[in-house]
Amino acid sequence: MENFFKLKENNTNIKQEIIAGITTFMTMAYILIVNPSILSVAGMDQGAVFTATAISAVVATLVMGLYAKLPFAQAPGMGLNAFFAFTVVKGMGYSYEFALTAVFLEGLIFIFLTLFNVREAVVDSIPMSIKRGISVGIGLLIALIGLEGAGIVVHPEGGGLLIGLGNITKGPGLLAIIGIIITGVLISRKVKGALFIGMLLTSLIGIPMGVTTLPSNIMSMPPSIGSVFFKFQWNNIFTLDMAIVLFTLLFMDMFDTIGTLVGVATKAKMLDKDGKVPNIKKALFADAIGTTVGACLGTSTVSTFVESAAGVAEGGRTGLTAVSTAVMFFLALFFSPIFAVITPAVTASALVLVGLFMIEPIKEIELDDYTEALPAFLTIIMMPFSYSISDGIVFGVVSYILLKLFTGKYKDISIATLVVGIIFVLKFLI
Image 1 (cartoon, one colour):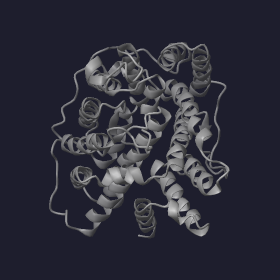
Image 2: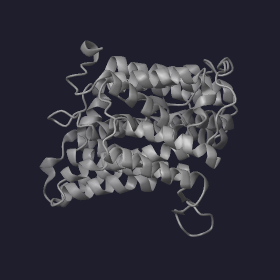
Image 3: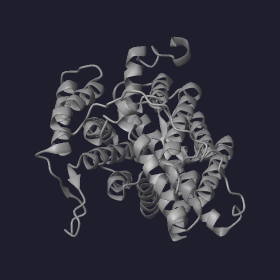
Image 4: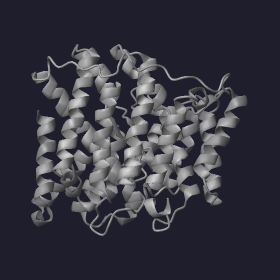
């Protein structure tokens, strides 16, 4: 393992990597419940999608760990699954087989684009100030996801507020606050594995509070994926609707994945001297392979999970972290009742603290140069406000180009950055 993953070179060890991998899994285990629930709206069998979700996460994350050797986990992405079910199937009236075909084609296109370094060029086109802003923005988005999941912040109906304070005196909200304090104390005392231990303690405290429950049985056999396996529909692939669906999936997945890879790598100080993510081409291949395999298994687009930041915060620095997460997803196939204990109130503590860790790169943004600071700031605030990593990147890159042009600093704009900016503008115009 030392020779393969270069643990000492990355200032880590086997124990630290495994704990980091388990921590990542615990913060994203919700996808095993949420993804089948969302895709069931499209008429897919929940049990089959559960199995497809777990297996696709295992395959994609293993490729990330063993091939790219990076500590990032993959699974069917949130937002992408909602687009699959609510827009393509319910909104446009197509079958889930049509949607799975679009996801499959998306994966093949991504393999092609990665092979010819197109996606790598897009990553490299993002200015350094925006890369740092991406890390901060992801931190705020992760914290918001944690707070919302636990009910600490809510979206009031008819109150005129975009967001408000939920019930924090009892139930999930109170448990999450207790978990945040416990985890904060552990981190302050420099306890190894603080996020992981914090979630375990929060789970136990939640039992007498009635928020978490111990499972009545431990093991269960995974449901068959027969009803969704290789369910493709080829008769509509040359239609305008397929083109629109494909473009949207490509755009959402590409920039969500790029944003996650750049943001988490920035926080982990993994960028090289030129500001590039190591093994980025291999990481993007892992993402593309995950999407292609996931479509064959019967699930929506697989992408790199922003919750990977939790494992990085625990010290995960190599592919062994990803391999550990993949093993946990495999075990979840047979021990799914145990993972029902990991509720949003439990993971909130880790996500809020990870949000804190992720904002560190803000210190390195040139705040005195407004052509650098404003694009970074727009990147930061638009991620949580729009609930989208890709939209945050759009605002950052386009504003960067405009500010540099109108202040006479056009030489700072690379051709690649300009091309990406034009694509962003066209996406919204179209």
